[in-house]
Image 1: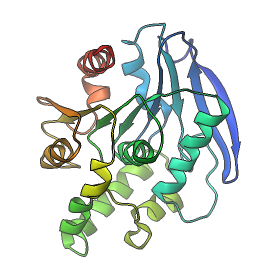
Image 2: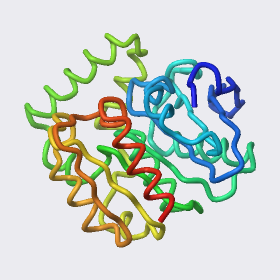
Image 3: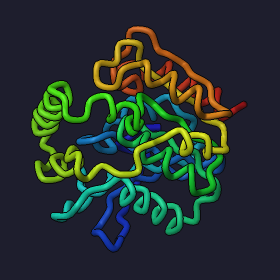
Image 4: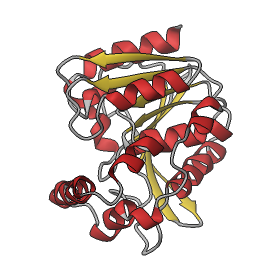
Length: 243
């Protein structure tokens, strides 16, 4: 697939604003790819090059990101889950696979907890309650938020969106043990061995709490294996779908 040539730009009107997404129509399984904080559909550019033409692929700009609207509001992960649900309904997608990176992994896990899917891929996923409980109120958390905001603004992200997402008072629906155990579909967990944003130790928690899950650690990769190790991630993804 070619990101620039093979995907159509489409828009979805939601009660929160207009959402931009890209679609590559295919005759086989559907997959929705959900980017991380301050990112966009472009993050999948390298990965989709290694995917077969028959795959039905949706790339979404989450609310507040890239070409989607960014209203002044309280940004919560539950609202992003609603956005994905509306995308599925609008396009009449039956049992999609969800591929979520970082913040998008959090969205994907919550979606799969309450909505029918065929399977989920969580890549260097955020959202674990253990992560936030360990860092909340610490200097490490303060520095983490400052670093994320700095990186996000360098990518032309909207300040009010990133600050809202990083506001600990707005954090809700963190992934607890009961949430992970409620995910009843197969889950592939992919993690970079050198992730310096979400420590690889959290990958093992996802793996131990999600019953039907497998973990693949990509040696040498940091927080975005789908970009730095795109062929390896594509092979893992297609193997997971094929199984």
